[in-house]
Image (cartoon, rainbow, N blue to C red; front, side, top):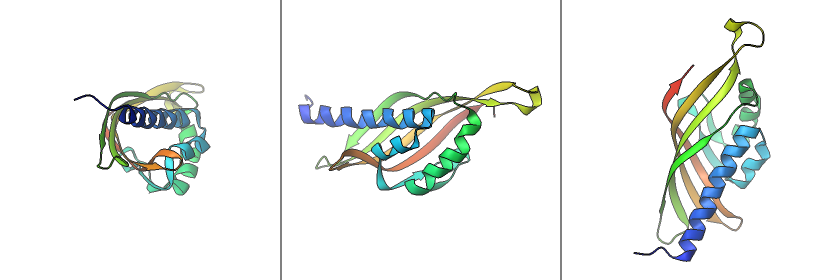
Amino acid sequence: MPIEAAELSDRAEITDALHRYTIAIDTGEWDRLDSVFTRDAQIDYTESGGIAGEIATVKPWLAENLPAFSSARMHTLGQVVITFATPRDEAKVTAYFHNPMVIGDAAGGPGATKVVEVGGLYHHSFVRTVRGWRSRRLHEQVVWTRGF
C-alpha cells in the first residue's frame, strides 16, 4: 500500500525534530529544545542517572550537568519507527541512539580524558501542534553503557 504524500511529510517533520533534539543536546544549545518539545513536555532521563520532569525543569538540569562531558558529545540516530494514531495527529516514535561522550578522567592526571558511551532507545509521544510536530513525552531507555 503506497504512503500518501501528507504522511511522508509528517514523517520527515518528526525525523527533523529528532535531529534538532540531538543537535541541541550535543551543542548545548538548550533553547533549541523549544522547537522539539511542547511547553508541558515530560522528559525522563532516570535510566541514565538523570532526572524526570517537565521541560522547564529539565533544560536547566541539562545546562548544569552535561558540560561535565565537555563539548565532545555526538549522538547518532539509527532506526526510527513512527506509528501514527488515527486520525494522524499523534504518533509514537522510537529511535535507536548511540551517544559517545568525552569526559575528564581525574585518575589519569591533568588533561586526561576518556570516552563513555550510551546506547539505547528514545521513546517519544509526538503530537501535531500549530507550530508543527512536537514531542510531549520522552523516555530515554538505556540498553547498554561502556566506560562508566
